[in-house]
Amino acid sequence: MDSDTPGYVPTKEISLKSGVVSFLGNIDPVVGAMAGLFAFLLLLAPGQVPESLKFTGLSLLQISPFLIFSVAVAAAAKATGSEKLIAKVFSGNPARMIVFAAAFGTLSPFCSCGVIPLIAGLLSAGVPLAPVMAFWISSPLMDPEIFILSAATLGLHFTVGKTLAAFGLGLFGGFATLAAQRAGLFENPLTDGISKCCSSSCSTDKEQTVLWPFWREAGRRSQFNTTLLETGWFLGKWLTLAFVIESLMVAYIPASMIAEYLGGGAWWTIPAAVLVGVPAYMNGFAAIPLMEGLINLGMAKGAAMAFMVGGGVTSIPAAIAVFAMVRRQVFFYYVGLALVGSTAAGFLYQLSLST
Image 1 (cartoon, one colour):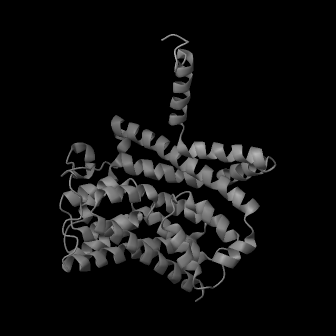
Image 2 (tube, one colour):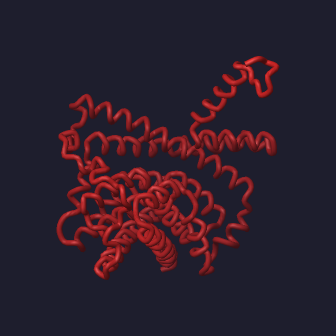
Image 3 (tube, rainbow, N blue to C red):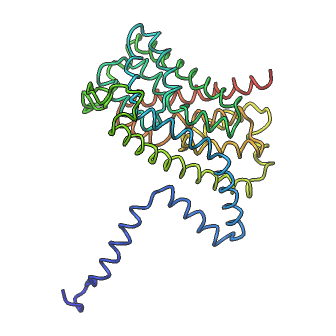
């Protein structure tokens, strides 16, 4: 095409635009968010940039031993294949299955998104919805990494309280679902098109067997190293973003405002925290330092508990996957369980502090 032709764009310009688009498309969203935050600060409050960098660096240094240990736990669980033991939980008496599923979900190293393929595989394989729901709800709320990092940041009392909330909410969701199914609801929870074996949990390959001394096999050593790097990067970037945001909260959110609206003993602080937390995306790891900052600014601990539980169950990536995977009535039922359960968790935890 001639340069005088209308609409002509030089080849070099096209190549440059394509390169820019490709570069922007490859930027990690979390890294991009941090870069955007600091660019915004450089324009509007340049003096806050070194303060935020200092705060973030010191916070990461303080939590690094716990972060390293938690990442190693997650990598070992993957390499040994111990996560596959979940299949043994879902057999036998329905009530016993619900209790075991809630307990296993509370202790298992699955995030809110990572658990979705496993849930689909269990349901498509014919596992009853009630124990699956118990595992489904409790799993994203607590795992070994979150427990370790929460205890280091928010204290053991709060962390144990959240662990009990995860188990209790799993029981509540499981038994409520069992009652609903006995009344004739949710006979076919999955949407059409979900395959009969869409999860590696359905596999019977030798690869899925548990091998505690995983270092004896080269493939499992490689899996450990890969998981170590991937999990470390995942946790590291989210925690870094969280500490950056916390530094800004400390600098710009008046403690009096937090104390007025989400502090004290007003009954509505917990429902308000739930209404904010349930629709919001709150990554389980990012929530830890953010909640520490809000509590230090005066947020009631019961409201913090409600916010973390509600936001953990219904994080947006997991909710989108759930919406696509199950029928609409099951999805809205799941959101309703999160609303009711997180509100109850907040009130019960606040009550425990006053007794």
